[in-house]
Amino acid sequence: MGVCGKPSSAVKASEESPKQRELIKKTSELREARAISSKRDESLSRKEKLETDVGNFPGLRNLPKAVEGEQVAAGWPSWLVAVAGEAIRGWVPRKADTFEKLDKIGQGTYSSVYKGRDLLHNKVVALKKVRFDNMDPESVKFMAREILILRRLDHPNIIKLEGLVTSRTSSSLYLVFEYMEHDLTGLASLPGVKFTEPQVKCYMQQLLSGLDYCHSHGVLHRDIKGSNLLIDNHGILKIADFGLASYFDDHQKAPLTSRVVTLWYRPPELLLGETQYGVAVDLWSTGCILGELYAGKPIMPGRTEVEQLHKIFKLCGSPSEDYWRKSKLPHSPVFKPIQPYRRRIAETFKYLPDAAVGLMETLLSIDPSDRGTACSALNSEFANIMSKMGAPPGPAETIIFFQLPKLSTWTSAPYMRYARIYAAN
Image (cartoon, rainbow, N blue to C red; front, side, top):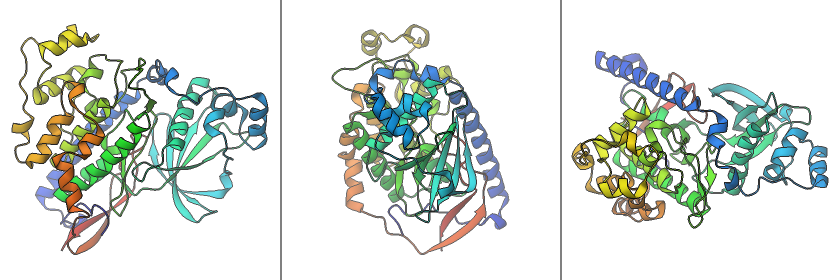
């Protein structure tokens, strides 16, 4: 049955009731809202996202000219070697004719994603194409950092970068990833689909395990959201899209840009302009994911930064006077509410198990220092219940195939043309 089982759906596409059609309409409206939010986040300039992070990427340094010459001779384009030599060191570029494009499954501001076949190994892969028409060094550096981080991470719950495709005369680069059939956002938005309690716990355990590995290796993801959490047909979850990731050092915090994390999953301190931060930003996003898994939709879908903060304060309460005084965040004078908001997480999610509410209370703490770590979350009461359950038992299953609107993932854009929905008999 797989690690986490499959979300249940009891209705085939050809047997839609009026209630089902209304659900589909609401789902369509939610997708439209997601698209607007994604476009707003993608409109941030690449330079703005990189602005203060350059010093936090050890490894992005120039190589000796002799080494650069060897890399060009091996088939790498000179524009890539000049900026990203360390990121590609030790690898040989794959040739484009060793892959077959099967379908375009995603489109973002800076890249396109294709489902493809690796002809040398006869397996399906995902090909992320990044084009550098003007060979802008900052754009190349942006991608080099993602490659460098992905090469250094090796964990079952983190997407695997399997290789790079380019040539000496090419102005583009393909990143070759293992292929994953679904993403969490796409699955959650399907009409009639609801995650079971065992599935929620199993997905959370995998997400926290992947994050714990990232953080223990000095990496912040900085864009945890449903569309960046990929799931295969066996229920394995993998964290993807490290385009905004950054190295960090808890003992020597260097300033980082606050213009990261998709709006609905962005913690209050970043909205208030914080530039000295750590693992707590990923943990806040994880708390949003936990609520979303149970609710079946984003729990704080703001349209603007002002509205996002308002939604956060309404659910999680506003910061204490002590926090406002100590943090001295740049945007505090503008966004500090006249009257304090009380915390409403327990009452809003009163239908959830106590252990789930307890973990959500921790992860969605207004003060980042109260969110703990991914490791402590894995040792929480909620996680202890997860580990005792093991792989959830599954009912008899039938596979229902039907065509869907494309789902979203790595590029915050459509990902799949078809999905497999498993329904209990």
